[in-house]
Image (cartoon, rainbow, N blue to C red):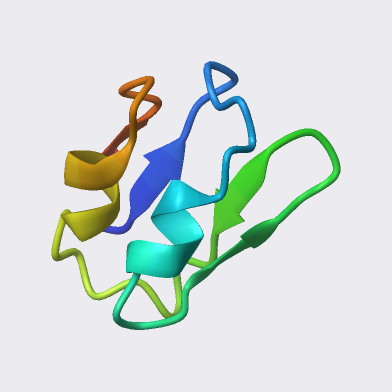
Amino acid sequence: MAYVISDDCVSCGTCEAECPAGAIAQGDDHYEINPDMCVDCGTCADACPTEAIHPGE
C-alpha cells in the first residue's frame, strides 16, 4: 500500500528530494504521493520533519 501525505504537510519539499521512485510532487494544497509510483519504502516518512507521511490504508 502506498504512503499518503496528510494535511499536516507544510510543503517543505524534503520528501520529494528523498523519494527514490520520484513518486512525490507538489499538489494544490500540499505534496502528494502517486500511489502507482510509490514503492512503499518509507524513505519519505523518515525524512518528513512534520511527520505528515503515513502508510496508506
